[in-house]
Amino acid sequence: MRGTDGVSLLGLIGLMILGSLGITQAQTASADTTFFVTSVGSGKGADLGGLDGADRHCETLAEAAGIRGKMWRAYLSTQGANGVNAKDRIGRGPWQNAKGTVIAKDVADLHSANNNITKQTALTEKGEPVKGRGDQPNQHDILTGSQPDGTAFAGNEDMTCGNWTKSGAEGAAMTGHHDRMGLDESPPAKSWNSSHATRGGCSQDALRGTGGAGLLYCFAAN
Image (cartoon, rainbow, N blue to C red; front, top):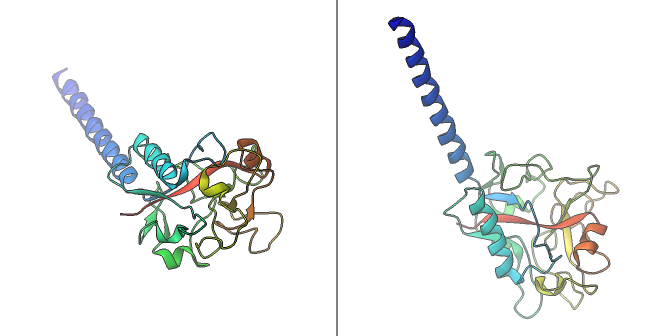
């Protein structure tokens, strides 16, 4: 009986050690996340509370998922005299998702044809896929307000929903397709950051109408 108990005890200890190692590995993988798509939007359409509010949204979701010690920046441009380019606020890279897959090694790579943003890699802070074209509901429109090279739009046409402060029937925002799929095979349809503008304003309903949910790309800038 003692021998059997001893074997059982050793087996139990082994399982406990393996379990703790598994937990440690999972925590390490989560801590290494430096890129994600938000699992939820602000709930107020494209009114994110400006860039500061968008950054806080990224940070709040990351911390809730156990990703700490990062300086999170939403991939968003703003327009006007003090306009900001999305590409200039996200750090130097490289960036990887919650599963450890690298999506770009640096800013130039991110804005090249070689980046690795796809439906399979553009995961949420929880490591979950985001619904895309063909899913119900389609949520592949990610807010960016940016041109393909990551810069802000010039001119007076609103492409940022009033620099991320509007949630009504006025304004529009440029979006990208995280799943790199659209109505055709054109470059905009496959663009992750500059596919098309929203239609019908900046409300949550307007974003849903074109295939979005007010989701954002978040990058660790440190």
